[in-house]
Image 1 (cartoon, rainbow, N blue to C red):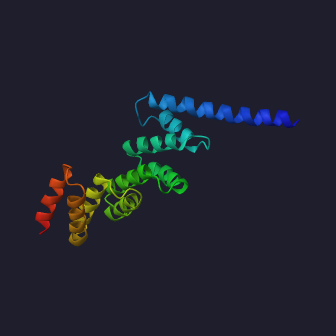
Image 2 (image 1 turned 120 degrees about the vertical axis):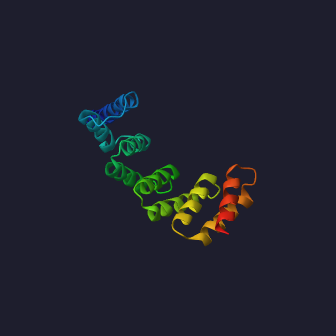
Image 3 (image 1 turned 90 degrees about the vertical axis):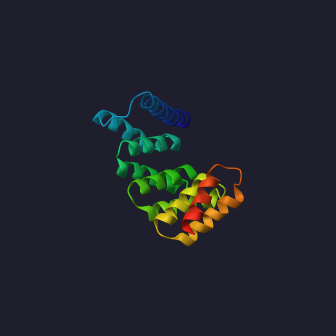
Length: 168
């Protein structure tokens, strides 16, 4: 009895994993569309508890690129709950907030990315740009100075120096 239950449990898990892998392969080999069957396919994979987080993240990106921001955000929020330190999740979350015009929330996400990746030059430049958009020239200047001092050989330093000159 125990071996039968164990076998059925393993069989169930393997069948689910195979199903998710097959669906994800089909998603990757197809063009995103607002077709109901395609969206149902995406939703089925994203709602499957056996689906890899990387699959769910790819679906969140696909939905976001399709303009289905609320669905993308829902998946992304669930991923962030499971792994709040994932830089890719936080960066994409910031990009969604920025696309929605919510610079304050985008800034919060980028600051969290900086906590785990303090030397990420692209992130630093985006944060400084957000500060500029929010008319926080003090923080923008401070960050641009940090970039100029710590990333001397990078092409973005010229942009930082130009921003510093512009901000006075």
